[in-house]
Length: 185
Image 1 (cartoon, one colour):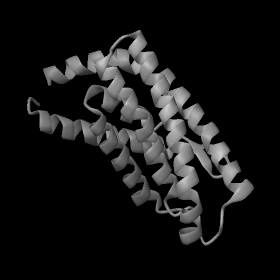
Image 2 (spheres, rainbow, N blue to C red):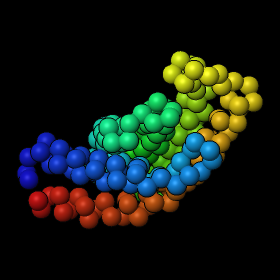
Image 3 (cartoon, rainbow, N blue to C red):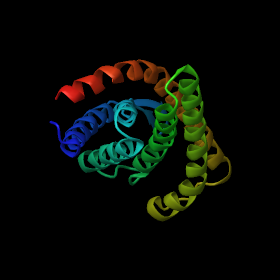
Image 4 (cartoon, rainbow, N blue to C red):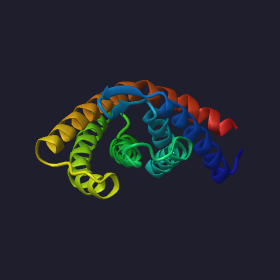
């Protein structure tokens, strides 16, 4: 597979499929929030290829999940937030790591990824939850309920960012093996 476009298409499909399967294995967190490991292949793809590759894999994963499970009780809100926070971690992490591939670069990438996932999660929940639930779910979320939703989502995003960071280090070590194997294909 010497053609780079074909290689990226094949790996994009593979990483999207793996991410989708991992997305199906959700662990309940609080009420409507669930944790999954579906951003691991997204992160690996971003490290191996480009951050844009990771964004596409994240999008395909969420679209596949919507196709298979439907909109669900939250009318796709979980998929929107999963996409936003997944991209929020993966893009800064991959951009920084690709520029500075050492321990300091890893720490900087991890810190920026975690801060980004938290900021995007808080802003996304604060701005998207009220109108989304008002217009699509036909009930109002504000005041203490909104604060509670944002706090619980922030806790989940912090855990997600921490786990992605722990998993990222071995992925980076393995990425050299993947890159060598891709050159041979």
